[in-house]
Image (cartoon, rainbow, N blue to C red; front, side, top):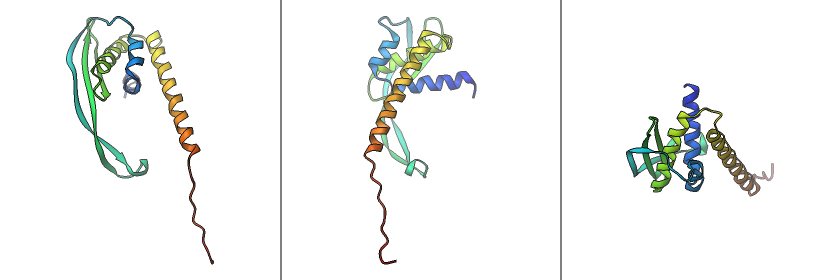
Length: 145
């Protein structure tokens, strides 16, 4: 994969995990001129899991997802997939995807997305530490050996 592809996958994952308020803050108060190529639509996807995180795959269940495709007036197309039924979030995330494609990697928008990623990472780390604090180690005592 090329570097731009990896960068795009990274920011799309960040946007997918972000709240609508966080995405709206990145877009700003005024939406750029754009055309809806595929209006936000909601459907379901099958979620797969792995036993222990590394075992065989199994179907965990279905999740609701909303997707959207837009084209900015100056050409770039943006795509988004958002868990749940939030059509506004999906549209805003697609607009951001298109804007991020046309801007330099050092732009304020890219830096804002990187800051959002850092906040998401810190929240994930905190949740992980809180879960680890409740971990119980069970052991078996061998009697009469």
